[in-house]
Length: 398
Image (cartoon, rainbow, N blue to C red; front, side, top):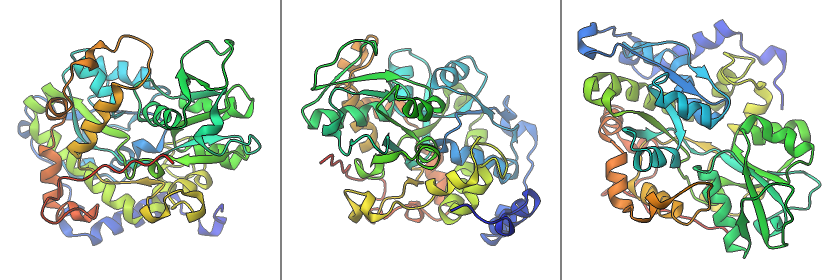
């Protein structure tokens, strides 16, 4: 429901309220600590890039609430780009040195491209869905035979989850021109930038898409589309986007990386407690980080209704926040990438040991310290008391 004008916060009122909320957590969080440049070594600022999706929420909230500044970092307003290809190329060119990326992308960057990228933390959990037209008659993966389905990147959780779902129903993912004929058991996959997906669905250029919000919510609100399946209802509290940086920044300026991670973990904690305020901050009615109205984002930051879920007992959020990069999930992703159809040569995956890949790709040193400083990982999840940094991956397509 769209909030009435009387309930909307002005920009100044919102930032004041948000600051007061942060202060309630403790005086330390409210006292900016501007450290001398020498503490940061050669690096004194961080450049942020992002796609206009809710996967970027912690980066944007950390900036919007001043958490980076309170850590003593110089961070200009994050730069929005329109596709994963542009974001990846910009990161490789050094235009951004801290960003969010679909988890399979840094796997591809490090082990195929030999780029010194490091995953610092999870940026969020869940946050995506399979969306179809409301009148399509498509209600499950088994209904997708003979259809055209858009994914945002070959190296994406979306491509992995879509192909997992199709294969369990006896369907075959293929990559062909959209004009090519399809057998009833085939599903044609192709890349489409996230902002183009809702209009392509409305125009019947595609039959379904799987992508991050807010584009699922936008299609629901504007085009009467329906959610076929939430991603967190397939793989419980799965990672999607992760926070990445260059290895040389870690080596040259570990203090900067720690402070940036602190800000991002604080932002995730704030988002968990303030979903409506998060929607406002991100929206074009607030700080304008995402080019969508607050009405759309409010859908993203509310829990799905039980009748929308195959596994309501999981009690998953449409989008969740938990920063620790569980190694079990990284291993699962690498193993699934070996079985997922993409364009291009994937020989680099065949000999890649998932355990070694997880250890080499992920540096959890900074997020562990940030979590310790905030009181532990249990603030973010119901983790095993004896082994809080391990978990079992739960995946059920059905």
